[in-house]
Image (cartoon, rainbow, N blue to C red; front, side, top):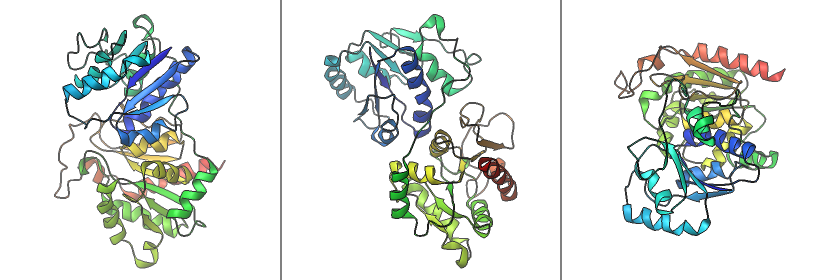
Amino acid sequence: MKILVIGPSWVGDMMMSQSLYRLLIQHHPGVQIDVMAPAWCLPLLNRMPEVSQALEMPLRHGALALGARRRLGLSRQKNGYHQALVLPNSFKSALVPFFADIPQRTGWRGEMRYGLLNDIRILDKYAFPLMVQRYASLAFDRQNAANLPNPLPWPRLTVSTQEIDQVLHAFIPDITRPLIGFCPGAAFGSAKCWPHYHYASLAEALIYCGYQIALLGSNKDHEIGKAINAMLPADVNQHCHNLAGKTTLEQAVTVIASCRGVVSNDSGLMHVASALDRPLVALYGPSNPNFTPPLSRQAKIIHLIFGCRKIGKGDNKQGYHQSLTAIQPDKVLIELKKLLSSNKK
């Protein structure tokens, strides 16, 4: 059996899709799972043993590019896929399986994809409140889709000791201090970010406790890292390493695997830390932890508002949301220390 998955475009969503692949392997031993996704997600897919091939989606995210999608689909006809699973809800994401003439094309209804999909599922949000459940249910036919195993097989990544040693040697000048990872960025901007000045206060407290800090993220998070560093005293600053934009995603995964603990906004790297089973304090503001929580028993969510507000601009001049500015560094430090202490037992 050969399955083509049209994967999500975001790092966090890609991590949650691993539960689907794990279920497919359990219920269809010997299945070949190929996942097509943007290039930036491929390092994650390459770490998932369930995935046979990680295929790059060569088209720009958001572009319809009808002709290019048709050519891409036609090029996949010879692969002999039995089924396609389309995880994004967009119209364009269903085009490649349609042009590839894959016999069974499964996905949620999304943007009215009748004709493109011939196994359309109608979402019951109460039956599947979590995103990971919505992905995982596609492993089953319509009659059994609601009977998900409990618990689900959560996303899990592994990193070798050799990889950790190589990456630490490249990015961390002194490995004698235990490392704490901070993930201070977020894909949708500052409204989902814990303020940089809170991260700086927490970094200072942890460094005085004998830890060192790795600031992780993409190029656009580098300025946040610089703002955190700028607030630290000179004797502390040397132990806070701004790696945002300096590592590849593959290297960031390895750095996170080496951390004693992680503090993160609601972001893709938060889900990576969860999949690596690192002690994790996850900071939520206007986004909803009941939809995309970290899937780990070593995670502590801090969320000071009930329900969820539409994410737009933050509430103050720096763009931070009041529900995140209200989370005090002392509270995060207490929760992180609890997790670190528990992890030693």
